[in-house]
Image 1 (cartoon, rainbow, N blue to C red):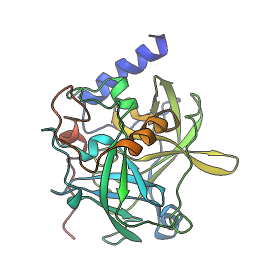
Image 2 (tube, rainbow, N blue to C red):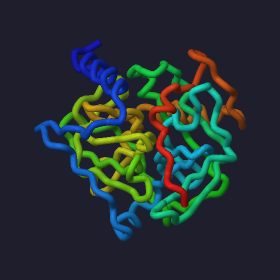
Image 3 (cartoon, rainbow, N blue to C red):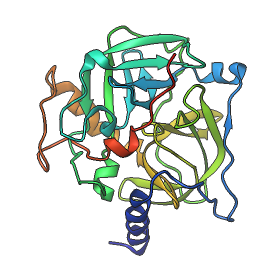
Length: 274
């Protein structure tokens, strides 16, 4: 393991041990700015929405193509290994103040085939595969609801932006721009972004050639910043899994397959009654 990976892994262990997350620090020690988007600003990001899970929990998800949204795998499994019933999953695109631009149910969930339960402290390998595709029950036109093509995570020091819902700010989309890539390695990047329960599954975007691209998906966070899977590195295996996955997920036991005991920590926030 390289020195950079050792630092990244050490920071991850500390980050997952402390929840809720403290504000993340940028490379120069300043807190990465976050603000709630106005209704007009949020309309530009209609493809990002809140993923509501049966029982009141939620995460963040992003439209990937007309039929699929992308989120963190641990958002759709319970701490006992049971998959969240698809009947209780709702992707609320452009959710704001109790309403949304569109709402879709989920027909099928496809987690990354390499994602494994690691107990309350996930390792770098688990974080790098903590993604799941949600097959929507009806398409959403990407001409109306923007999606973001994948691109490689940029190098340390590069500027990215994070769009998320989170505890205490779950009724409107928040943006952190800029925040920065602090370290990366093993398919994981540590960012100077701040994150909190509900932020799991949030898209990390970077601008290339004047367009925003999806470079990561947030999985965990703590005092050292947010941790995101490198989207471009993880997506080929996820697409292959989509082609072969059955219609239903089975209950998983520790070490057997997609499962995260961290759901209790990361999906604990409940939105106010609407």
